Image 1: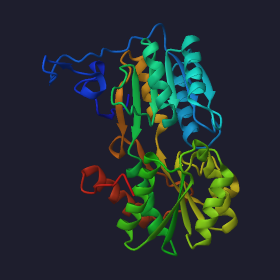
Image 2: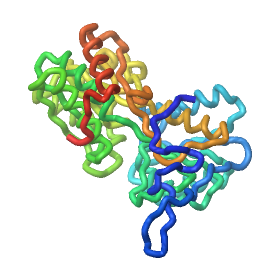
Image 3: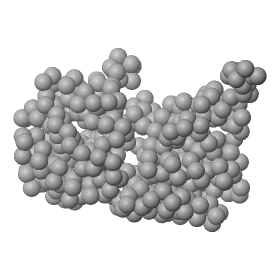
Amino acid sequence: MRRLATMTVAIATCGFVLTACGTAADDNGDEKAAAPKCETTKIEGDPQVAIAYDVGGRGDQSFNDSAYAGLEKAKGETPTLKTAEGEASQDEDEATREERLRGFADDGFNTIVGVGFAYSESVNKVAPDYPNVAFAVVDGFDPDKDQNCNVAYLTFAENEGSFLVGAAAALQSKTGKLGFVGGVNNALIQKFEAGFKAGAEAAKPGTEVTSTYIEQSDPKGFGDPAGGKSAAEGLYSDGADIVFHAAGGSGSGVFDAAVEADKEAIGVDSDQYKTASAKQREHIITSMLKRVDIATYDFIKSVEGGTPLASYNAFALKDDGVGFSTSGNFLSKDTITKVNAFRDQIIAGDVKVPEKP
């Protein structure tokens, strides 16, 4: 299994991540270095995997499809692996998500993955009721900083991968103007925006980047191709010749806008050149690779190996958790060389990539 950059010192006990598993306190209420309270999650029976997709589900050619690829890889190695899938709908509430997760667990699925930060609250609420089920949330978090011991939060250095495609875009741009379309204006998507802007500025100082968001808080911004198209059309009209999207299923609308404007676009999460329509792929010069497939696969394999991942597990450039694609041969050799040089500098710690715009 791929070695991860993880915040846990020892997954089996949740290590020294004190906020994750709690600490003991003396009579004065002071924290002291007591034995950690977490133990390895012991699932019941053979691994049976259920995937709860975010809005857009399978077929979004992005985030959800990448998670499915990880599931398929694991299933290919273990043909007897029993699997199930579910999908979030537009405007669904937390109760519906919780019901989906509980349904999987009640049906005997002991390895459950929620795809997308929107599952964080429901997983955090459901997990304590199923201590022998290993849960994971892609882009997950616990706002109370008191993580359940049977939950793995799979996070990524989206800002690092976005830095690389930002540099590539600036080097390839003819107008010196770039655009960014975010699905929802939250801290996670702002990491994409921050990295993209930083990369563009580093590669070609003075490059102008204009950002727009489809929704401010509603998750439907990740499943609105019409909204993605409208947002991209505005950016192209304002002079941008390359637009990068971090908008999930809405990205297909960004690609449609690129086709109609005869401009260029940058995909996200998976190599979207490979999954886009014939017309669209002629305009997708690269994609920011967010290896949700690797995270999903590694989590499943950890369960099969008897030591399920727990707490926060971060996937960065140094782990091949993020990166950029070169399909279609749109990027020049000089651009690729310079982008790879930035990649090496980030891994070495010589370049620090911001997480906020």
